[in-house]
Length: 181
Ligand SMILES: [Fe+2]
Image (cartoon, rainbow, N blue to C red; front, side, top):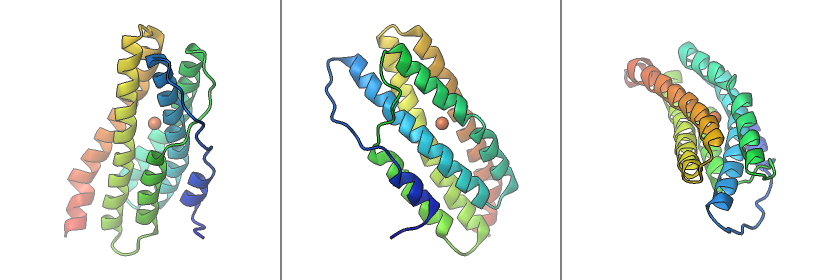
């Protein structure tokens, strides 16, 4: 049995209920509930990575982004409320798989810069999943004429993109260079 905190976080996920789509609005609700799961698990996993990563700039970037998590989660609750849906998380294999990969990097031994490169890659995979999910949700919200929801999703999407860019810069200009020595 795996006793690592990342596994504990993933094992606490709620189970998926069955889905019935009457139209794009229902698809959007399910998508936002999956995003909520991704954000809630992501916030906890990100804290473990921030504590475990060696590079101070990467740690600062992760800590700064972690402070945005409560607002992102609140926006998803607000968005689900706007759609008249329950603010419940819906588990998907996406968060579990991403957490598994980060778990593996956190448990890794050896050269700290190489481990940091793997951790940053794992966090960026998570950010890319969120960026894709927010982008899709925003496109659907636009299609449905939900301007208030579009604005909420755009704010979170922008925050994710900024975090991703910062991590790319730190990896490309520092961590990857040191790891390659
Ligand atoms: Fe996020």
